[in-house]
Length: 261
Length: 261
Image (tube, rainbow over all chains, first blue to last red; front, side):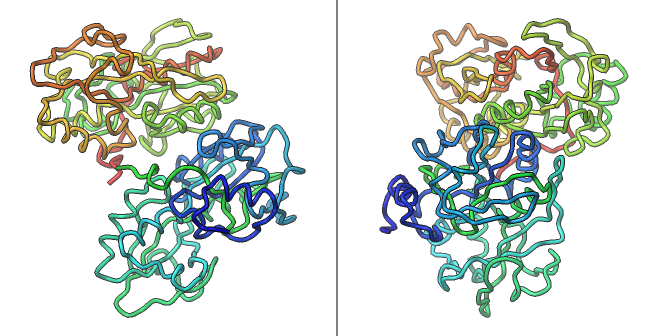
């Protein structure tokens, strides 16, 4: 696929079953979204969890029960077919991975689209700040921390963070650049020693891949969307549909439209 | 009441029935909140309305059904007694004003605390920018515009704006200062000619009082919390409890904690 294709063109390619791979690098100027779908009976309290924990769970769009078109961020799209790979969960256990969830759809399902760090990675690179996981072609390193999120109803989770090593003389700029993107994880939550977050070994992430940390670089930690997955599964909903990690929903909203100033 | 009292001291004075007046100017460093309380059956879709329209409906805190203590923004407070004056609405019609809603409370009620422009007015004054409604001791001028909010379920409303005349050479600074406060209405929605918003006569506001606009001043318009009141009443809920205009809930959260950068 041409990475310069429009989000609409990419979604159509995905819908036709011609792209079941991760979406990193596709349509880099546009916001990609984490996906969570669950029953309306749990929707208010999951939304409350997102509102109380905006750094790990930034809201891009939430749809009314039964609505499968993201009318605000991707009019014309179909959330049941336009993600390359989905996961189907029952009572918090993974049941299947599938490229199409139409068979699982019902009119009581509520869709949550949550922001993704791909948005601020583009901004970091545009500012000349290296993003190691992209340089090394790996998934970003993610860690479960000792910081609890604020629970809401049956939803609770520890804060999960992603880590990127930043050259010491660019750490301040990295804070500034990502602070603009409050709707897509925003400013870092921590700079420096991971043990303050309860992380014992940066070389052994809980999710994703390890990346190289060079001399003269400082680990910088951002809130991560995996937090929302842990929160959702903590409630063990009868049915939950999500994207498969790295296989995001690509919206029509430019990253820049999510910058706060 | 000493305006330098702490939010907790002020809430206790209100709870004892010793302050049934507007809260403008009290504890000016702390965020004050618009209040909406309604049944859990409508909570998801009202929250959706707020998320879709964050400029007029900035969320400070939302509580689980039946919870009357704002544990995040004002631990120890009681939302049923700590607002100077409440309004009780049935099917969208005003039934009563009262200093205590304990008799109306039930365990299915969900409380929404939404941001208020008092927060950024403090920031404007700290930056040396005059706030005419405060100078003249009047309520701010508010207007219903021709811009619809994005509806959610049964909730819909036109955008309501507040207007402050700003000296021409301070308009840019006013945009900068208020942009930091994205959680409490944030940047202006419009600068200059009110007719672009469908406002015919700035001297005849739809809510609040007219204020003097001097030569060399430009009208600047911000999204206004009255929008949420119109949205709530549009759904004609069986029961709805709100603050009485100007009689806000005073939180323990410093305005500065709501600044995005």
